[in-house]
Image (cartoon, rainbow, N blue to C red; front, side):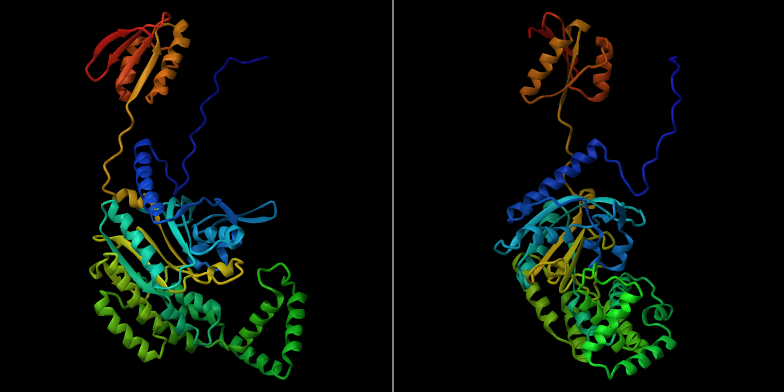
Length: 488
């Protein structure tokens, strides 16, 4: 027995928080901005590629900072750990390792596509957005850094946005940290903390110390264990530690690192006592570095004094000098640049120059950023070192500030059948007009002529064409309300 009753309406489903619907007008605007960005990148020799939205979770864990890890949309599916990509750089490097290692260098790749980050939604920030950018692979030194920074500036200027560049160099803090007996976890925390301090956030070091270094009791046990293991030969010690790891159920065979690498890492931790004093010393340094910011002519002398006081390698300063000279040749004035040596950008794969670009009058609204990451390719399996740099930006943020005129919808025509029997004729007329390049809708609701005229005016059509069974066509110009008749 069948029922003719109409089913009750179900409640609507809400859009997920942090996600966004994009209407036709906004979509057209963003696509116009994207076309201009990709045109500029292609003009500089960058080839557009596309990488998967889904990647192995491990791809984004090998050298990401804690902030990015916390943002991952990661899940298990059929015994695979999978993540929605939070950015493109790691995917581009995986593509290089998979398919392009034998190509001559440099390689220039551009991309655009959705990325996903689980973060607190706010003005100008959503959990899904379109990332557009480029990677320059195989370009060592300041020439590569200058090219990608200049590209970011050229793109924004072409869209009517006056850019302000914030420039840093992570090599200064990396040089300082590698001289201290700190565990990698503490080094990573310090890099993340330096970025938070640079942005004016409060950090309570004392509250973090136990988690980063262990308690005094753990430190004492570590020292005692190290002293007892000291008489053993290195090979015997490594065998003992590997056996211990296997006995307690720690997997070494399916890791991204070889078993001997894992053992050496454990031994290295045993060789370093949990030194809270070293961490306090490092925290004071990153806090000092994060407090330095300003025009290059003011900051560089201060940085020279910091380098001399801590007896650090001055190479990062020479690289900044070289970069500023090349940027000037590109027409980027020093007045557009702010030096900020406390920049870390929240990702741990950077090795040198870093930068972020903002609108000149709004340093709280980052449009794009990037830097140098010379170690990432080998971390993802490349056979040889690969100097590399790049940048990316959020299309939506850039499009919101772009000075491009709004892109109007193409003029549209509405074709309708005068009678149901004339529908086939109306279809033929619509197809003929489309073949000439017109944007044409066909009335599929079998409305009256007066109803079609009301609908067409409300939707902004410029013409209504009503076709009868003989093939004659009545034209209404909806802008002037003039009517004429033609044969098919």
